[in-house]
Amino acid sequence: MNKIWNVYLSGEIHTNWRERIKQGAQAESLDVEFVAPVTDHAKSDDCGVAILGAEENNFWHDHKGANLNAIRTRTLIENADIVVVRFGDKYRQWNAAFDAGFASALGKSVITLHDPDLTHALKEVDGAAQAVCQTPEQVVEILKYVITQV
Image 1 (cartoon, rainbow, N blue to C red):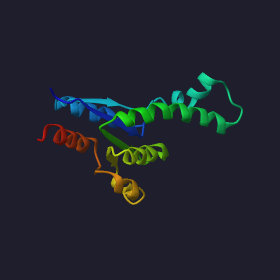
Image 2: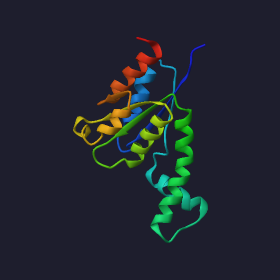
Image 3: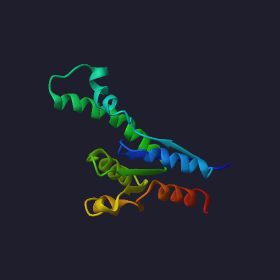
Image 4: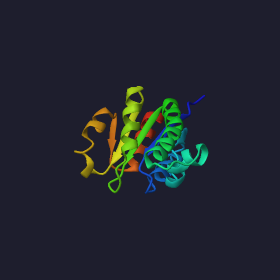
């Protein structure tokens, strides 16, 4: 029986990088299940007040949402075999940096994914990763190698 690898896809939500990895893994017939945070920005931001009630102060609005999202994120990272963390150049993905650090602290294998111009800014995050990629296709090749040894 083959192992089904659990891969958490964290980070930037404004490009199709997750789909490229999923399609590449499917094309290689890899035994992988992908999971991710809530990628609907508004839904993610407003989940706390939608469920627990409105807040007048933006801090508490964000706090409620962040805590509810953390339940999902922490659980999925704890159950992941590999955590892929994508940093985009347009927005600051502070939550992705947290995810990378949390996964590393749990002893999870971390792959970071970002453009070369972010290398200096992410040197500490990259230092905790087992691999640093510049394209989703490189991530697929790593998954192919570690899963199939090819």
